[in-house]
Length: 591
Image 1 (cartoon, rainbow, N blue to C red):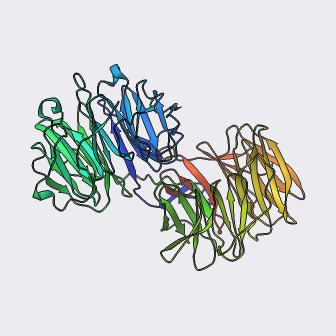
Image 2: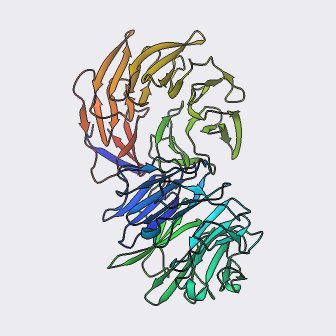
Image 3: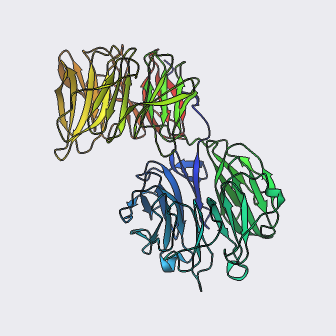
């Protein structure tokens, strides 16, 4: 045994950068599938405390406050660079949040706007604590973009792009009126820094390139012939630089266009493949950097105001969260907003097997032995992908499926409300097992490699207890119960029906020789657990530490490289090696 960590390779570089925000002090943040990342002198680093949202879609900053929104709904904010997050009240709106805008002179007016899918515009005047719908005048309630004139001294002009044209507000988002481009989906809009004098505003559409207005958005004309090959415009910014005003537009097929003559003519400065969905400049006293966020391909940077672009090869933001074993000894790595990757050589090489659907995060995945079929759990049920085909095999009306298990001949699916379904024909048909008692929230579902032991871990409110149930004689039988201050549990069944390991909050318990015994107690909550089937060593992930424990002995810490991102999952392989996945998507092996 080498007694050290060996870096294998990233599962997949890149990832999706959905939004970029920067302030005048050189701070820059990214909203990604791996959460919020902040730029430091060591590169992009994830925040220690992530916002309590699943699918990040937008972020903005003003006056040392940061606001983050999610496609799963909700807005949160932080005054201390992400150390503490507070939830906003959003007028009982559960629709996805598509965009955020901090108003000019925010320190004085405390105003923010948020666009939603299907619910219109939310407006806050108390720094984002409380939001109210302000839809007077709107005729389309799917908001794709928001922007505002930079000077609100005399008139508080704001623009909202929708699925059916653009709207303008002269009262800071209190009311709206149609402003043209009817029948077009307006995905980006930007007003010139001298908007009060020039009335110049430019809008990007989903199929007709850019449109330009010089009368404050009342009349529009298409951009010239050089833009005839422009695809859907997803992002648009303008900012002052040493030689005047720079305009940048990002398109769906990876194109970035640049203009320095008030948008009259445009140069194609980059032609790529990955869609550009976010653009933002960041200034420091020494350097100015422009960032471009891409779908599936990470981040581009420019240090000469958009003339040339370089990829940030160090950025991996897939947001991997779980490692799962397959019946044939392979591994699955799951990134909720990015998809599922499969390895058949103990984590040395990975192949992308399934992509996440828009607004539908992957909650779990399992692979059966039926011609390599992959089953993935989403909020609406279980989907099967095989030979480029994707179809739903188990629809669930309420209670998202969060757990999937597979052996060579069986499949199980479990929902958060404690229901479990079983399939004996590789997902073609399913039958529901008897339900758990009421008020039990399912945390984990596990089975032994031979499929003879099926275990469910639940959490009950308000009693605050984690309970293990095993399926015996067609019924769920209470097996083990332990008090827990929060629903935190992980499970491993390394052998047959005679051995089980469970970590509940900070304690590890083992079922052996017909009885439960406590193995070890840790000082921090346990996030993941895996057991070597022959040596009996139990490996624990707690915080950013990985511990090795045997029986009641004091656990030994396996030193994690300090310069690398923290680990998120541990898993033993069929050869007995210990694999660890960090939150940058890099796989490590301890031998």
